[in-house]
Length: 100
Image (cartoon, rainbow, N blue to C red; front, top):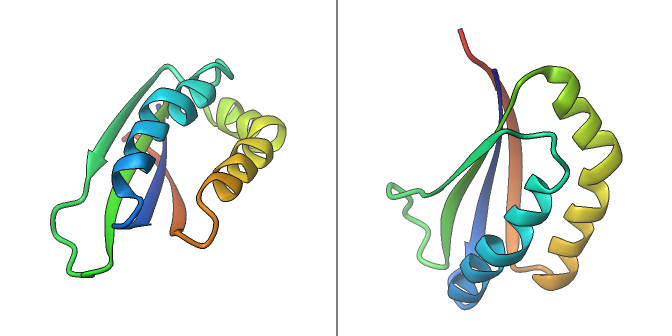
């Protein structure tokens, strides 16, 4: 099992709109690629930035091949939609983890 984790720091001024958009639009679009079998969406509680809130979106794939296909075929367009919807209002970093 591979975990593709996306951690996002979102500007608090758009946080609520972003959470709704993530739940109703972005996460369903990622899952529609059929490269992930499950997901989790968490708010990070131990952040101290007064201007942003952080979230972790976790996507679970059966194999690295599924993640590689997602990154090559689907991620660029979906990430571009995110940038267009919330320009200059977030920072994101991605991590790949393997279950041991």
